Image (cartoon, rainbow, N blue to C red; front, side):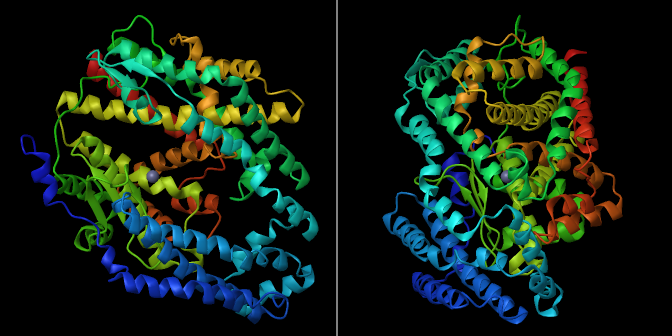
Length: 599
Ligand SMILES: [Zn+2]
């Protein structure tokens, strides 16, 4: 417990990350920076030669990897240094130099994929069986999967020449909503007039003063409504782009095209939506429970984020947080816990908040560095969860890098949030198992329920909306503001159920979600959390075979397709079962919360 200790005293001794382990001096960084261009030119020298022999193709890929590996280290260091103090211009200059170098060298690498695809099929078939290429076989097969969807070279060049223009819907959306939109002022709990921004909106929605929540919600969505024609046009442009690209590349649909990168069948996406539909009853129950505990006559959309009980105000020192996380992760086995110690002993973690430091938290690093973590540790329980989450990413990177060659060490986005969420679930379980304190238990269960609400239910609703607008547009339905609002409001009614009487302005919410420009991305949040719920349960069962399977997943990097990696770990996401089980776990959590607070 750290209450009463001033923040300045407690942060003074908190560790900062050891970036010197990457480059001891700026001169060392400069030396690697200077290697990037010659290494890229070595790779480019293979242009026109790939079909010569398996050995030449192997050497070309190895040369590409060597250049990328140094480039990533140089890039990572520049970014992490800059994140330590974003106002430092020498740090910023380093980032700018790397980025402009990469831009100038991009021409030297663009030839590779088309040249591989141009190798005639019978020749490639022999290449794939050649021992020289055994290491790269998987990545070549992945690349060749795109062959039926790749156009002739002049056609590809033509499409490529439009690439900047094709990014405009998303760019205009970003500029309008981040720079030009002004949400004005609202009055906070103390009657103080405060400027409303994207950054402080969620803070207002967590207010225990309902009037403040309502004002923030109405002000934000009311502002979006004023721009609905423009925002419908940018979304329409983006959706048409996805649909057109899928058509010219011979995919059956935009969904099929977007999922093909991870080799995922569209049925996985549709199963997710159907399974959530089948379990909405449990979600409606949670809505009723919120209404009762918050003592409201009607529950609105702005009542979803405020804590169910007055805040859990205990403060935690970083040492305490680290100890809690170590204990919580014990189900991962003695070796994991020993390996985890390196995060502290080698100073992977940048802990304290300080002026100029980038906000938020992330896990970063590259193949030739520690899997660093940036935090802005503020001593709340939430910060302890963030530590567990980011350590989940870092340990995943640690094991993948140690087990896989550079070529396969980076895991895909599809599995990226699984290890981090599993760690959070283990922490939640550990704290629930070790406290009788009613308020803390309610706080933990409430957080868990809300996390599943926002990650599985809400993201699936987004995924369903995304699919509906793509299919409607492909069928010739114009994406007008009225159509989009009506579609969104009807899905919101379906997902939140009869217990929620939503402010009509919720119909406008589609217009502010940047993820709708990411091309079928959000469903991965829902599948990732469902997988994590199953895997945490496996780890807590104490079954050693299940633990081994989990540790294999952490080591797998990108050595297989994501669904295969998940299946080996113990979750078959090709079936609806894991999502169904996750939603039953949600119901149990809600029931427990109900027993605790209403009995
Ligand atoms: Zn994460």
